Amino acid sequence: MSVKLYDANDEIGRASSLFGNGGMGQASSSYPEESVESKINRISQMVEDDFSIINTRLCLIEKDSKQIKTEESRVQTLFEVGENVEIASGRKWYPGNVLKTDMLNGVEMVTVEYSTLFRDKKKRTKRLQESVSSDRIRPQPPSEKLVSTDLLNP
Image (cartoon, rainbow, N blue to C red):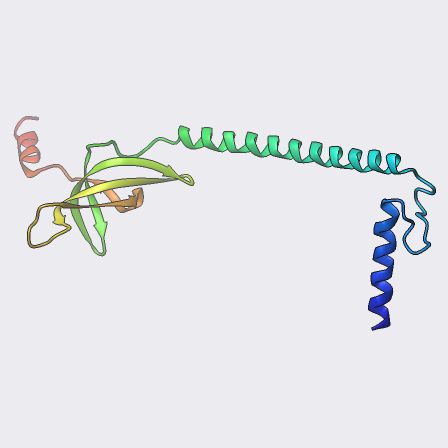
């Protein structure tokens, strides 16, 4: 218990030496007989220095953030809005189309609407929509009519 009291007394001495009391008869060894005004000026200078360092770091963070956003905007999207695609759900691929594309942490996210899946399976009024990563969608294969027409007209 006496060790803890000694540590507390030491802390009180250090804190009070900053404000000029000398704390329990102890004088500040690094700044002997320093006036209150001088101590306030020193503390003020320390706060200004800390603020300057924080401000510099914030500027660097903002610069990095702008650079990341610029790099994300340069990434080309793989799918266009309105494009017909197939969406992987489990082991099956379902037809649908692209409603919206976004970049999220460098990953292309695509909002899709299924052509054959509905929110209400019985009424079949609202088509199911969801946001998926671009690795879960692919272009729809060409229709059989286009394939046979292309073969007839080389």
